[in-house]
Image (cartoon, rainbow, N blue to C red; front, side):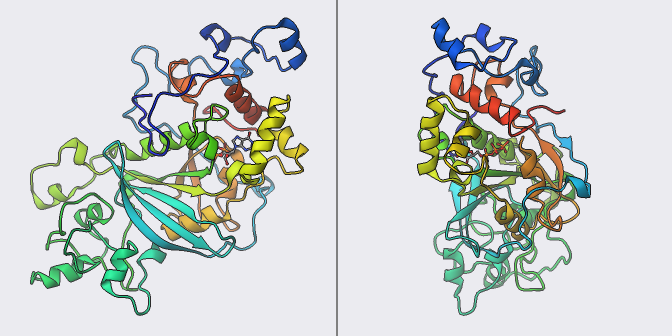
Length: 421
Ligand SMILES: Nc1nc2c(ncn2[C@@H]2O[C@H](COP(=O)(O)OP(=O)(O)OP(=O)(O)O)[C@@H](O)[C@H]2O)c(=O)[nH]1
């Protein structure tokens, strides 16, 4: 797991499964679900993932060179839905969301991210947007609030560039005026130099040559560069067990880490950087901006049933039921989640509209549901989240009978798409 440093879960190698599967078992070519058989044979239960879903060559696996972790993920175009396809349970109206506070979080990988905490009109929970890269900003955070001081704005995170001791203004424009530099309005889209300082790890105050950060409406301009294509988005539901206490029953922690890793990769095309604009020395690769993206982290623990009920479901699973049956036996839907909040948060982050987003998921329900009642957000590409154990031929990633059962049920019952097909 060394090449997959954890952004959100503890950085150590995955715990060995209580029932580790051998390489031979992992390639078993049949699906054996009968518990009686397992117990009668007194042998370890077989892996449950059919080879039909465990291709020897996953779209990302390369036997000769090993997996490349430094490349942008391959994505699959998503076609526009037909009316008959649009089945997800969508609220007629999206909830109202407001980003209350944002803070810079340096990570163990050296990349920084900005954690955005949202309140909303639908529930009392604190949903989160984890923003990578310099190009994505929250409109509701940046909007001025009546009576607030510049210090108030900085404390709630509505500043551009980087905070530093003695900083007095939240906006670049004001810092520039304060330093007596001549105002230089470029108009239109902000310069890449300015953009790279928006969320990025710049040192000290922004350069006086940076363009204005204040839009006509009094908010802060930002835009995701066209050349980067659709921004990467992951909608992730809370999983205390998989993300915090190292559960090997699911791959949730691994998926969160992988999404963060992909969003931290350097931008694939040589986008304009502050130095290229100003004719300065080019930045070293480690300082180049990543294309970034956002993980919308929804507090929908246990596919919406909460931790208490999920733990009961785990006991039912140990009694022989799969993850969907366990929910139903507890009188919950197989999946009790909704995604209207994610849609509203993406809109607040400026990721709505024609250009669309690239969604990291295997879940077909998410692909349609996150688009919202009027396709406010458009999923134009999908990046499959292939289990790390599949990509590395079992060398890394969460492994064991429990996670195999979990993934098998996702494929068989929830119709998750684990390949580029
Ligand atoms: N009820 C229940 N929830 C589970 C179980 N295992 C994991 N979960 C929850 O399932 C959710 C997984 O969410 P995600 O990873 O965002 O989504 P997904 O539907 O698996 O789809 P992907 O985008 O393809 O990962 C989290 O809320 C977990 O807490 C389980 O056995 N029972």
